[in-house]
Amino acid sequence: MDSYIIETYDLKKTLGNKKVLDGVSVKIKEKETFTIIGQSGVGKSVFLKHLIGLMRPDEGDIYIFGEKMDFDDEEKWNSVRKRFGMLFQGGALFDSLTVGENLYFVLENLKPELSEKEKIKAIKRALELVELKDTENLTVPSLSGGMMKRVALARAIVAEPAVVLFDEPTTGLDPITTASINELIFSLKNKINTTFIVVTHDIKSAKYISDRIAMIYKGKIIFIGTPDELSQTDNPYVVQFVNGLSEGPISA
Ligand SMILES: Nc1ncnc2c1ncn2[C@@H]1O[C@H](COP(=O)(O)OP(=O)(O)O)[C@@H](O)[C@H]1O
Ligand SMILES: [Mg+2]
Image 1 (cartoon, rainbow, N blue to C red):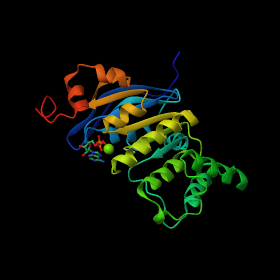
Image 2: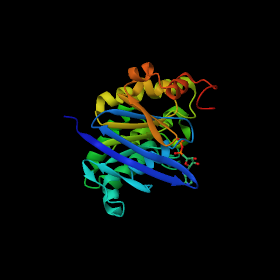
Image 3: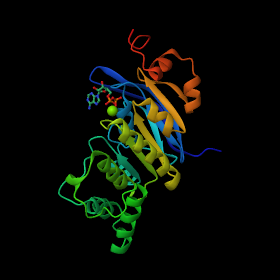
Image 4: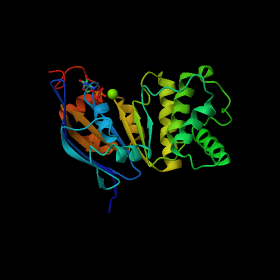
């Protein structure tokens, strides 16, 4: 039987006068790479924020690690968030700290019980996993855009989270760096074997890294399935998005 790490039931959220989520139900399996795709502004980030308690739904339920979340229990959300690693668009590194210190900062907060030696070992391991061995002493401003993403990724996994959330991990990167980050996410997944939840509007990246893909359109999940099923669907909205056409049902 599948074991679910996160389940949402009929989530609804209106922001301003827009029904951003209009009944979103998904069950994310343990250890899968689950990707949410959809056009810009469709509510992908809003959905992700609901999963970590940064936004509360108007209606609906969320279960995390099999347990129903009480939206008023901030302490519970805090403890859940500690088990989530996050790679968010705006999640910049501290410029004034070295690469190693950026990771150390996370461990001090999330794993204060670790000894100095264990912390240093965890930092080394995380940097090796993102192929940045021996970069502890580099300063952040000296890094390229691709390296910064890698360090941000190392920071997201250094405390060995149960779930890693990615919001648009390749946005703003050139095609070559995008390909290398996708490759890294894919190989990292095989090495650390935790649940990955990815939000992207980049269909190529989604197909490459995902076990399952869900597409949001007009507040609802209109497709959910494997990358192969995505390629084979005849849902016109999905087909149009996947093919990147400018004419058709979405723009109509
Ligand atoms: N805090 C907020 N207040 C009001 N509207 C918001 C807020 N956050 C997002 N929205 C709106 O919700 C919609 C979905 O946004 P978002 O989830 O960021 O889209 P995307 O799919 O590009 O990640 C957009 O119309 C956005 O303007
Ligand atoms: Mg977004």
